[in-house]
Structure formats: C-alpha cells, structure tokens
Figure 1 (tube, rainbow, N blue to C red):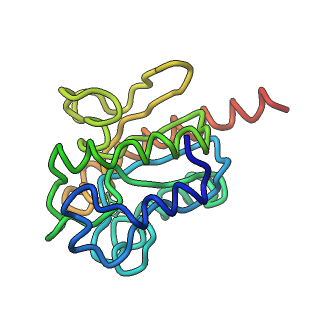
Figure 2 (figure 1 turned 90 degrees about the vertical axis):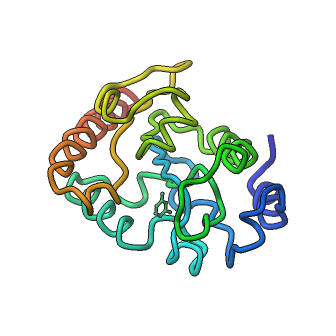
Length: 188
Ligand code: URA
C-alpha cells in the first residue's frame, strides 16, 4: 500500500493505459481523506479533466445538491472514480483501462478506510461489487463485504437524462444518511 504522497506521484506519472495520452489532468479524488463515506463514479468528464477534480461538472453539481439536501456535508465524504483519466468523448472505460486503474482506487480505499462505499452507476457497481450485475436490479440494497457496506445506486448523470430516477437515488442516499447517523451514534 502506498501513502498519499506516493500514490499521487504514481498516478501523476501513470501511463499504464492509453487514456494517459489524452488527459489534461489526472483526477484522483476530493474530500475528507478520513471520511466514513466514500462515493465512486465512472471516470472524469470534460470539466473534471480541466480542473483535476472529480464531479465538478453538471452531474457533480446535481450530486452536490442531493447530498446537501440530505444533510451530508462535503467534509463528510471522499469522492473518486473507477478510472482517473478522462475517456475520450466521455465513453465508458474499457475493461483493460478499468483493471489497470483499479489498484489506485483500492489503495484509496485502504487509506481513507470508509465504512460505507456508494457505487454510482453500472461501471462502479461492475468493478467494485460484481462483474455481472445490473444496477437497476441491485440498487438500493446494502451489500456487506468484509465489514464494509456497499450501496449501489444510479450515476447522477443518469438522473439528468431520466427524471424518474431522481426519487430512487434520493431513497438510496437517504438510506446512506441513516446508516451514517447510526454509525456516528455508535461511536459517541
Ligand atoms: N462522471 C463521473 O463518473 N465522474 C466524474 O468525476 C464526473 C462525471
């Protein structure tokens, strides 16, 4: 396992897949490095590639609103992606790209040590929970893996395309908030 400084260095110098050819900035993560809650998306989009930060474009703004409305503060979570470089035209990362990038995300899991990991969208669910899952079938139900709780839900970009998903993601994030509060209560 690498420490944060080493991990950032490795990511910045990474050329393991061809996404590194076209990236402007590597997008590692943002938020509280010791958060109980981690959220994982798919990969950086145009804005994220420009700024070097995850979820700062339209989908990120919607996610921020959702979390704020649920009273989950920005300093209560850490957010990252399956791949750290923008796939051209925002296509879905191919398996080879995701597999080469995943050790970095696993290292982030080990450093942040979240109790809850929210997998947003089918790419996050596929690489973190199960290769063969469909997000529509598993969303909204807790999965316990070695003491870490995983909550699969929609990707916020899907909500921008389909309004009916908003209420479902809201329900999923409400479960996350309730669990977070319960964990805090247990600690105190
Ligand atoms: N979509 C993602 O999956 N991640 C981002 O950082 C931005 C949009």
